[in-house]
Length: 454
Image (tube, rainbow, N blue to C red):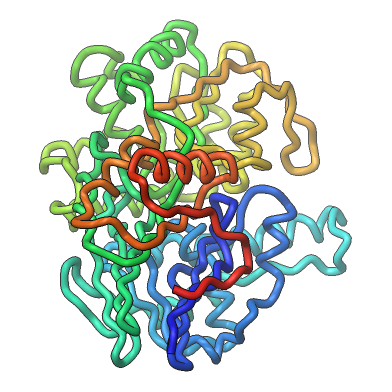
């Protein structure tokens, strides 16, 4: 029996990663991500998969970001009862991220119903916090570098991908084929996370292409952030920093702590981390010292260099404070969460600043702010953007195009086929061209929903 892969997400787009591997009447779902960004993509979250949850024998996650794990509560609610394999760090982060995702969806549905803003009566959440909590019971952690059997006769192994705590590349051996899923690759020069491990030999590679058409600037996050926050402190403004609660929040916190230590920023500049998820994630860094570059003193500074805001009341109290101050808040693309309230309050004042810290998927508020739009819609109201907008190109937690190619070059031999996934079409195709021209390997960008026999 042959081995096949069906691309149920992360094909031609940077979101919704789901890859269904079939062999000998068994099916494994590699990643279980939510679609984010454009409404056209988000609607896919509501469409049934081409296989029923009962037909899936195993799920393996590369990491905890919602575009790789956020569909899991829905899959479990709809009948998936078997194991979900991941690293210990991914298990701990999913326990933070997934219930919060369900809670946010319940809040969004309630808001739409209160204000009669939905065509659906009533508007329903995709899944609830309780659905997410139930799905966590199915997580089965495995250490890096130790093989396990997600399905009898199938062999899988995690290797470090950098990027965030717990993030892994996955080598899957089935039916005589070796399939390597890169997951989201971190940077070799990341300020926070250790570099990705060298990739193992494989016949087929699925390589992410978030930054497939771009190179990171020569500057680092410290050099980019220092002048922006110096300007902010001088004019007494408020910086609103939409951050991903897992990864980017900690990178920016670490950068600010280092700049204060170096005397580049006043130690008195107040910094607030207004995201319970990010607060809890920051606490995890002490438990996984082998996965990041920070020493014990830096980990301590990460947790104590900002005021950790947990409750809604504490978050609302920030509205009564004057600048200068820095507010880090989720979500990183301003698609939901507490950051929307801070943007609504502060984006209209020219003394203030909006600092964007990474990839902004097309269709998100973050992408519209980055594009220079003068107003965005928040909670049914138009919010003027008069604040200075700063985009930190150096804050990305993804390998750029050249770093991705360098990672592939470290493989022992050329694979038979590379599928370029998890990138917008332009980025994916640009990386495909570079793989074909520079490495002389066979590469293609798969179509969403298509099945390819290996």
